[in-house]
Length: 446
Image (tube, rainbow, N blue to C red; front, side):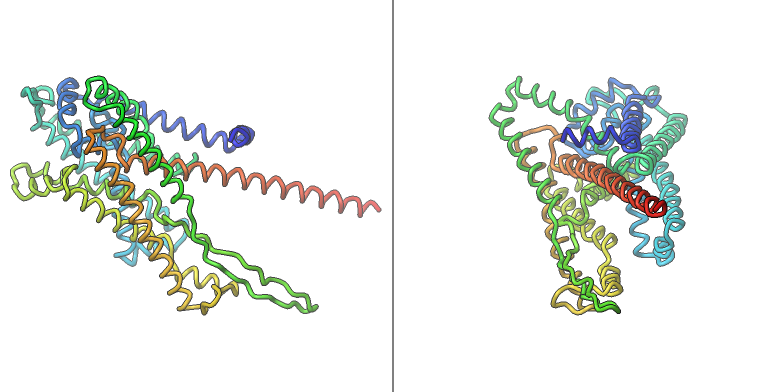
C-alpha cells in the first residue's frame, strides 16, 4: 500500500488529478456551509431534530447535510442524477436518442447537453416545491421556518439560489469526471455521506451516555458493519470468467499461431452502486409532488406510503433496486455486440456455436449474474436499515450509505491502479523503443 502511495506522488499527471479531485470536493463541502437567505436557522434546526428517521433525513444524508443548513447546495447532485435516469430511459424508448449514443463522441456530447438542460428543469421544479413547502412549515412550538412569513420574493430568491447551486454542483461533478479521478457525481454523494459520519458517531455516543443504547448494542453494530463491508468488498471484486478460445491459424510458411485460451470477465454485480442511488432519488418524488398539492388527500396518502420504517417503503425500495439493476445491466452490457466481436476475431465459447447460440449463452449468464446482484444490493441496503431502526441507531449507519462509500471508493482505487499500470506499460514501451533505436544505430555504424 505504501509503495502504491509513493508511486502516485511520483507521477505528476496522476498526482495532479487526485489533487484536483480533492480541491473540487473541498469547494463542494465549503458551499454546504453557505446559507441561503430568508431562513430562520434556529427554527430549521429545531424542525430537523424532530424529523429524525424521516425521508428528510435520507435526503439530508445524500445532500451532505445541506438540507438541515439550507445552504445554496441544498439540491446537491440529485437533480443531475434524476436527469441521468430520465435520459437513460429515453435511450431505450426513443430511437432518435439511441442513435445519438451510437454516434460516438459527438452523440455523447449531445446527450450530455440534453442532460444538463433537463437538470436545470428538474432543479427549477424542486426548488419551487421546496420554497412553497417551507412557507407552510413550522416547528413544534409554532415558529415559522421562513423569516417574515415568506412571500413571492422568497420563492423567486430561493428558486434562483437553489437552481444555481445545483448547476454549480453538476459542473463540479463533470470536472471531477473529466479532469480528476473517479466518477464525479458518485464521489460528491460519497463525500456528503462520509461528512455525516462524525455527527452520527457523536449522536450514537450521546445516546449511549444517556442510556438509550447499551455498549453491547454498539459493539454488535460495529461487528455487523464490518461483516457488511467485508461482504461488499467480496462481491464487488467477484468476477465470473466466461471461457473464450481462439482457433489455431497456419501461416503461409507452415507456422502455427493462435490457439490460446482466455476468458471474458464479468462482474458479479454488473450494475455497481448505481441502482441504490437511482432508487433513492426516485423515492423523493412522492414527497416532492405531495408538497405541491398539500390539500390533496391522494397525494398526501402517496407520500405517506414512502415513509421510512414502513413495509411499503421497504418493498418499494427493493422493487426499484431490482428494476434499476436489470435496467442498468441491460444498457451497459450488450450480448449481441460481444458475440459479433468474438465472431469477427474468430473466437468462440467452448461447446457453443457462434452467433445466436453465443448471444443466448451470454444472455443466460447475464441474467443469473444480474439476479444475484439484485438480491445482494437489496439485502445490503435493507437489512442494515431494518436492524438500525430496531435498535434506534442513527440513519447515517444504514446499508445504502455503506454500500455507496465502499463501492465508490473501490471504483476510484481501481481507476488509480489502472492508471498506474498503464504508466508502467508506457514506461516499458518507451524503454523497448529506446533499446531498438540504439541497436539500429549500432548496426548502421557497423
